[in-house]
Structure formats: structure tokens, C-alpha cells
Length: 406
Image (cartoon, rainbow, N blue to C red; front, top):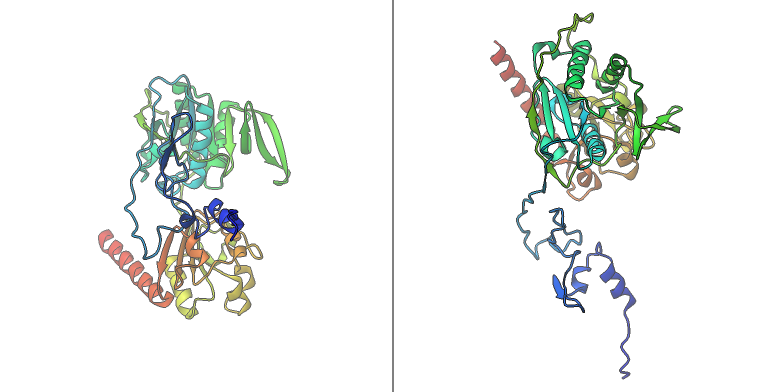
């Protein structure tokens, strides 16, 4: 037999591919070694390696999954604290705070503000009314200003503009950032720009140096202009802050906000039939697929939740739902804040159609389907039993609310 050492190209390929199931078996378990110059080197690709920013590397090889090895308890990593004791300037952000919490659009905006602030500036978040958010520190907020009062509640754009003008007079921010959205930021930003006499940069999706790039021509063209003081940014304008935590120190206005005589009377929310809302504009979508066996129960659950109904292509082709209810690349691209997928396995076209949804909830029997992997919250079980329990929970919650109100 020849003494020539033969190479195994397949084994070498598996050793290089960290996503291959046999990757861990093809490498020696070596976390550190001494280099030729006497320097101790660490394996940055090893499971559990903690990088310079305190981020622990996760295992994508699948070696820690299954019954052969036990899962180790998750270690909470303390992110490095970013402090700005004496800011040279401020970057002010006015998040939409829909539902009292930061949305993904708001977090993108804070990421852009952190990019503009650099190391000398501080990100100042201006929030109106009470909120439920407790993650301002990890979202990139250095200073937090909450403008409370009955005058700011409901739809009061003129009064809120007065509040922003008071903030502008006291802190004199270098830039103002608002989300260019349908949920208030787009209108508020344009009203505020008119009050300041500024020309805002709208639909901005990228900032490079002293230049900002926005969408134009029905979203088919890019318009570059000098960096404006007031920026209305689109979603995904920057990466959210994820590797640092900030102080989120509370600040207050030194003067009271002048009360404006509003010419708008807020009559409250108007009840709208969820079925009449176009799919592309719906905020809450309850979508069914091939796994739904009781469609009458599905419609009953959607009505109890007050959600707009949607469906996968299979359900539409089988005649259970109308064609205009189809969600996906071959149907309607949706941007709901909450998308519930019942019995939908998650074909690539469907996942493309819900890519812009904020939160996805999946109800399915198959724990390994692609929709479960995409979902933020998954419920494994029979859809009929889960929907019945969901209806009972909603009715119990509403009955308790009525008793409290009485």
C-alpha cells in the first residue's frame, strides 16, 4: 500500500462549511492555541466565543441540538455602556410609538441617529404621553424627554408641534429625525418643518457623509441632496442599535409649552369593518392556509379578534378565500404590525409577501416548517383547538373589561 497521504475533498469542504451538519465532527475541539510568535490565538468561530463587543457567537451547525447533547443555559451578555456625559450636540428623534412601544421603523430611525451622533453627540428621543416601552437603553437613546399632559393626548398635531418647538429652542438639535410613515410621523414632520421654516428631506433611506438619499418618482428613482436639518426617514434607513446600551437619562423642559388653540376636534376612533380594509393597508391580518380544516371557526376567530382576513395561495386555489385575500409575492405584499399565520407552511413566495411585517405569529402542527422559523411567536398544535381557546380568551378578557367599566 502506498504511503502517500490522500486528500479527501469532501471532508475538507465539510470542514470549511460551518452550516453543514457534520461540520463539528470534522474539526478538533480547540478553542485557543499558541501562534508562531508566542501569541495566544482564540478560535473566533468556536461556539460560545464572545467578541470584543460582548456578543456571544451562536451555534449554527446543529451540533448542540437533538438528544445527543443537552442544551446549555443561555448566558445573558451585558452590552458595553455608551455614555455621553457632556454632549457637544443633540440628534433629536420623534418616534411614532404606535401602541406605546418602539416599532421596527422607530428602531431604524434611532440607528440612523446614532450614526449621525458619532461619539460626541447624544441621541435625544422625544415621546408624547404615557408609554409602555422599557428598552430605550438598548435601542440607542442617550436622553429621553417625555412630554406628558392631556393637551398632547389623542390627535393633537398643532399642540405637539408647539412642544417640538419648545424642545428646539432649549436643546437646539443639529438634526431632527422623524419616521416618514402613515402612523403620524409623516404628517408631524411636515407640519414641524413648516413651523421651523425648514425644507425637510423626505423618504430618506440612506445617509452618506453630508448627503442624504431619498426616494422619488413613485419610488423608482433616488434623489440626492445635501444633508438637511430635518429628515423624514423611511423604514430600513439604517441598522438598529444592537451592540451597545445607552443611558436613556430623563431630561425635562425648562419652560412650559404654550397651549395652542386647536382647530381640530378629536372625535376618537371610528369603527371600521376589517374586511373592508385593503390588505396592503391592514395593521392586523389573520391568515389561513392548507392546515385550516374548519373555515367557519377561522372566520369566527378573525371576527372576534377584529382582524383582516388573509390566505395563502393554496387556500385561495381551493376556493376557501377570495383572490384579493391572497398574501405573498403572487398576491399582495403586506406590512401589518401583527400577522397571524394559521396552518401555513411558509412557501418562499408567501414569506416574501410578509417580509415587511413587524410581528409574525405562527400556528402549525409541523414544528420544522419554514413559517415556524420565520415567526416571532409559534404555537404548535391543532389549529381548531387553538382557535377555540383563543376565542374563549378574547371573550373572557372583554367580559372582565366590561365588569371593570361597570
